[in-house]
Length: 298
Ligand code: CP
Ligand code: NVA
Image (cartoon, rainbow, N blue to C red; front, top):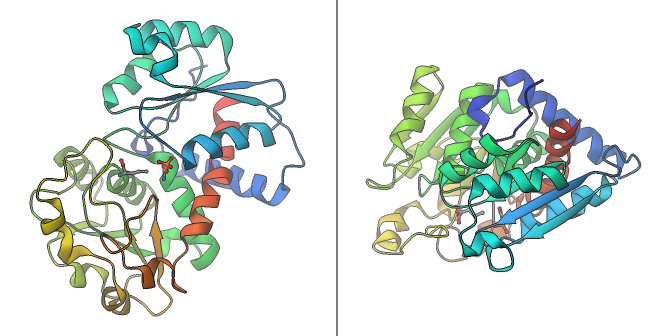
């Protein structure tokens, strides 16, 4: 049987994503009573910083009865030039799955190619699929099936936006992106959405994008590895503030993967206000990823 890697949402069909989301929801309801991954070990490879991904995967494995080991380039031979391929071969002899957070998507692919255990994408410059599993779980807890949702993305067309596009293409909900010229999502991702007749649109006008939507999502203006350059000027009109929230549906929720920069991509009154679901969203990283872990490792 082929390995159940969790690399990018566009590799899946809707049924599989729904199955993994259901597993996560069941494990959340189960409150750590069952330990289906007893005796299993997950390696976490971090080539970029992380708070949520690191802690949620470690705690998630523990709650499922297993164990996680976090590795960084500084304290492994990866930092001294041992190849991803050899690292994949060796880690596969010790652990039951490998999560990696790295800049280049090609490294994730290489790891998955040489590993003989499932590989999970914990963020690359191109995508962040685990985040979107948690985001969908959060949306559905608050507002019901995502399939019926209108979601607006305001800001940089970055890795998190790309995974939202994949999710919209897969699950069929409407996604309206508002991004400044020069910071559009990658052409390849937009072309994929188009090829699936996804309800994904791109505008320069944030107010038009959010009008009547059920959910507004944003992210940092400067992702890990980005140069700030002119980004603050370009992205200022895309800030999620009370005026923008007021243009969405009355019951709309606000999502942000965190870490947030209050006063930049979002104002404090929005992220700390009644429509914000960001703390549930952060918690749901744990539950949604337990679904991912169970799916990958059993
Ligand atoms: N949202 C997210 O992935 O957070 P970390 O960078 O803290 O893992
Ligand atoms: N777009 C952000 C997400 C952080 C979780 C980054 O890549 O830095």
